[in-house]
Length: 274
Ligand SMILES: Nc1ncnc2c1ncn2[C@@H]1O[C@H](COP(=O)(O)OP(=O)(O)OP(=O)(O)O)[C@@H](O)[C@H]1O
Ligand SMILES: [Mg+2]
Image (cartoon, rainbow, N blue to C red; front, side, top):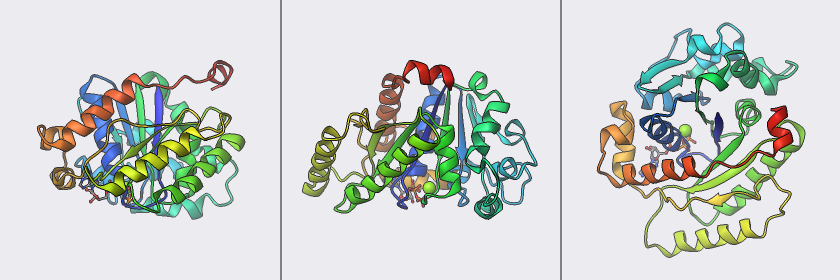
C-alpha cells in the first residue's frame, strides 16, 4: 500500500482537486483507493458527492475516538472509498492539544483497520495549514506530493514546507519522502510558469542527498488551468466522469500514470520496521 499526503500550507493551490482526481483516476485503473479528507472545509467529500455535515460518521469521529476508521469510510464508486470530513474536524486541534501521541492518531487508526490489506492506495487531502491534522497525515504517510502554483513566491513557501517535512521525517516518521512536486493551475506558454519551473528543478538538483526530498521530482504532468476542473465539484464528480475529453482529464490521467509507475523505494530496514 502507498500512503500519499497531498500537502501545501498555502491555500488554493490545487490540493483538493489533485487528491480527488488522483484517487478517482487510480480507482479507475482497478486500484483499491481510500481518500481521507483531512480538511474541515470538507471540499474533497463534497467534490465526491458526500455531504457529511452533522453526520456521526466522519473522520472527526476517528480523531475523537467515537468511531473506527472502517465505520466512517464509505464506498462512493467502484474501488473508491472516502473517509469524509466536516466542520467539526476543526475542533481536533484543540481537543488533541494535551493528548499523548496526538501526531499518531490517524496512523494508529489505519493500522487497527488493517488498511494495508484493504487498500492499494491511501490519498490524504490536507488542510492549508501545518496543523495537527497535517502532521497526522505526514505521520501516516510514506509519500508527500506537493501541488504548487507556479508564481514568484512559490519557491519561498516550498522551502518552508520541505523543512517541515524534514523535521517530521527526523522526529516522527523516518520513512517519509517527498515523491514529487506537481505544477497546478499551469499557464501554458507563459514566461513566469517556465521560469519558476526551471528554478524549481535547479533547487531540487542542488538539494542535499540526505534530505527527505532528495528523490523528489517535478512531475512531467502539468495540470493546466481548465474550467472543467473548477466545475466538476458542484456535480459531485471527478473530472474523468464530468468531462472525460477535457484537458483536465488528460492532465490528471497523465499524473495517475506517473504516480503508478514512479513508486519510490522505501529503504529496506525502514520498510521492515514500518
Ligand atoms: N487546474 C485547474 N484549473 C482551473 N481551476 C482549478 C484548477 N485546479 C484547481 N482549480 C480550482 O481552484 C480552486 C482551488 O483549488 P483547490 O480547492 O483544489 O485548492 P486547495 O489547495 O485544495 O485549496 P485549499 O487550500 O482551500 O484547501 C478551486 O475552486 C478549484 O476548483
Ligand atoms: Mg483543499
